[in-house]
Length: 498
Ligand code: ADP
Ligand code: MG
Ligand code: ZN
Image 1 (cartoon, protein in one colour):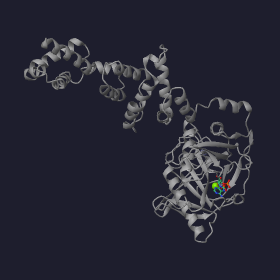
Image 2: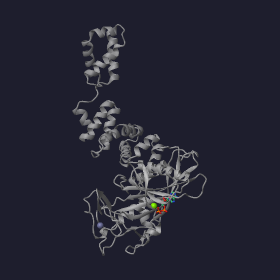
Image 3: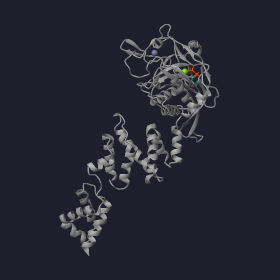
Image 4: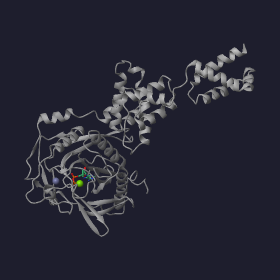
């Protein structure tokens, strides 16, 4: 595909994203069925989510809390009074014939998210993407097509969603991905969503239009539905920008429509004409009261919001004096970030100087050793080691009880067996031989076993120094402290020369 198109032919892209994120509640948004992925089809359903006559919805308070939390973290203004509305459409996965959503009065509106961009011509690396609104709604069920037959699974019907709608402030496919990553990171950090794109709990509709540079009016947009990976979002938008430019350059007009991305062919295909709001015949949901939130409730949620990843990264650089790269790696996973911070606290406990272990050293251990061990064990279910035990291991290496390579082996063993470092070192006899007597004995043996090399060394063949050090390492199975071996060898040869 010609990636020049779109960059320098007088056009610019305008993109707005609608993100749907499922909420990590225990039960569905308007009934008490479990909100769990992967259950036996149609096993998590009840009269309410099946829309049996007479069944009424009840608002899930946990869902409201999570939605408000997300809105606050995304700098979106909370509306103390909001309304639920019926969005009417007919589809086999929607038993009621309407979806409960929010329309004119959403729970929150007017916010923004800062994203990282590649430095543009203005040299800026950060860009503010305005968020129009975040509202609460329920998900539909799922259609499954096998051969000529279609099946419907209604377990997902009624599960809680927030829809987050950006303003059309995004100008490229890579900015769109950057926005989605920042958004997903926050939702996952807060425990609002599991962010699982493969399972569809975090998915996005991309609205794309193009216009001639300098135009102030927006071009006609196409909406690409339900793209479920960062890579596909990027490719779908890139494709769509080029397609629309192509249409215009060949004298045609872009039509407003809904398109689907085909990842196998890497193209978008027209699915249907775009429906307008009036097609949905929105009206206020008569079965639910208005949602009224107190100042107190909002403040309580505000106070429960933990430090977000971007703030953590800035603090790691300013307070811990770590590099941006280190800060980035350490904060990618919330559990790791908190583990690392706990490690620092534990190291400091009792010792004002951090127990002699600098933060930078701890960061290196986590980044270089712990993370790679955890990565190698991915999928086995993470079993973390106690912070105090990890610190014991780090101290053992830093103080020279064991060398760095042995340290790595011990860490692996700790992770798989749950044993403490000291136990493993003792059991496997891994401690470095640093005591003079032990090394001297080994060295004397080696000298005795190699009389020819010894006399050459004494005659001035200094290269043999390395040979003897190597032999001692072999004899001690790598546990001798090489620095000590050097010192003692020097001392012994001096004596012999004298
Ligand atoms: P809907 O898609 O439900 O009709 P909206 O009209 O509110 O809802 O728009 C949805 C999304 O489309 C928003 O993210 C908005 O920024 C984006 N959008 C609207 N007009 C354009 C356009 N001309 N080009 C690109 N994105 C647009
Ligand atoms: Mg839309
Ligand atoms: Zn139900």
